[in-house]
Image 1 (tube, helix red, strand yellow):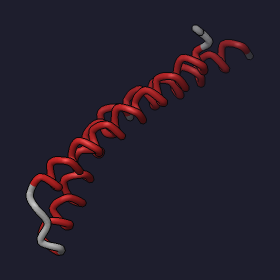
Image 2 (cartoon, helix red, strand yellow):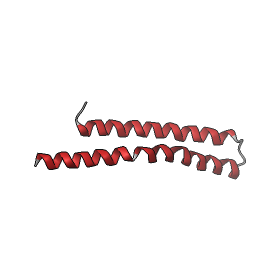
Image 3 (cartoon, rainbow, N blue to C red):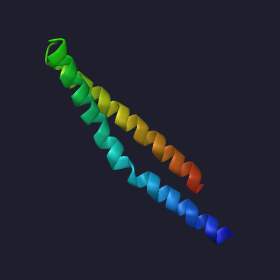
Image 4 (cartoon, one colour):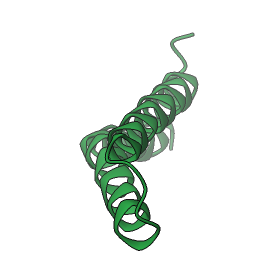
Length: 78
């Protein structure tokens, strides 16, 4: 039974780790879309677009760190 639990633990860890590139790409992309919407709709300066991309990237990094902490906790190597 322990072998089966280890197998499912490995599958869970692999799934979470494979999700990291999607998270890293989604943050700046959503920041770009939001910043583009703001600049075109409210006629804001173009640096708002760059600020929103940077905020999206920071949020992606933060979420990636959170995922890594969960993976370390699941794998039991803390």
